[in-house]
Image (cartoon, rainbow, N blue to C red; front, side, top):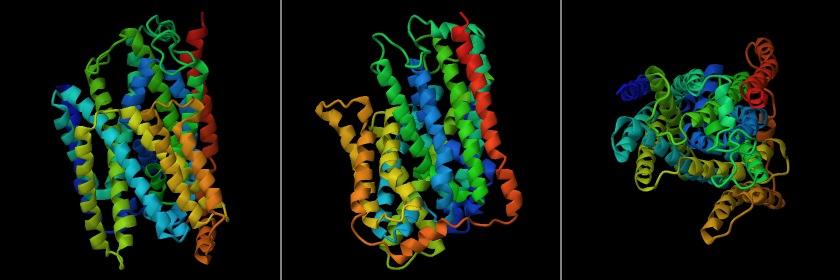
Length: 525
């Protein structure tokens, strides 16, 4: 009962925030990018919250519990770096463009409605698949905790995240994301000592996990071995972690639900600082989360979802935190889908532009429609939280990765190259994933996303040999490469220059924590 009450209270808070901010949304800029008013804390919160979801706290957590916690920690080393590379190589230039959506940026950069439409369609299809996975994961958890049926839990989830997102748009999403960011971060950090204590205390809990008979090699760099192993040979498992880590790094750097968060930043310095804090946050959350999960296996090797090994009050925070992670991603995804449908497809198909009033109304209507479609898909599609999420995310690594970076720095890319790069990258991943339906098994180093990336880069190079680059394209690129001078630039720069030191200090601290809670207990004997 306590778990259900905690979830209900948190749901009421999120919906109340949406209702309160509804009255403050007066323009499309406020609805799409929160009036570009986000401070460092809020941009950090929405970056992390829109990334972490049930894919992380349920799908990946389950994968870690099954025997692969260290593989996921290896993976996160690579993917967290996507925030640093992303903000410096794409995010800050995206913000300089003053676009309201990422497809709008691509359309303006290449002075092409066709490129903008291709980016918008891939956004809608890819994020819709991810939204289904995250919604289903949250509904599964809610059904387990509350005792209601899965369909009813799915409807409840839909009502909550749809209501505050449709009402307040990006402004409500950003505020709620920040609240949710604190909730699931606190849940992760507070649960760590309790789980370690329940598993036998430190360092025995880690030592037992490393020598667990039911999961041999649980804490090795390659994960479990023996009949239960599902990741192939140790080197294949490591190759998978490195490849997926690099792919997710690209996803974090350029995907619409991550890069669009920089559009909400108050200035470029805020975007850069948020990228640094997001890197630190992701690394620490994953480290504490997966060390905790690896020791849970020593308590019970087949633990049920509803069993609790922490105090009830902390269990309430943990469950509410996981629900918050799901809701934050759902709301971000829905907001981006609705924005692309209205701003990048509907508005572009009209001969005259929407007024702000009509744009806001059309955006809300499109979100209602798409959320209903997602609900229906969730009801009939069996849940596969982690793998659907991975598939949907990698679509953007292939279809957007090459064009995002080249759109900023290359002076030779044409609109033809950009369009076909998006198309070939998107369908390349789908083609690779479809091969398994015909009994064709690909080696780990030829993951479907690798196929998509190769096709995307090839299409970019070959396609750019055709067509001409217009004056508008050159002017747009020159403008985004021009560093803006902010108000109080010297003061802002002095603060931003401290951030490399913060990153290095946090890196040293994370290494020390890893040595103390992982390396030392395993090698003490």
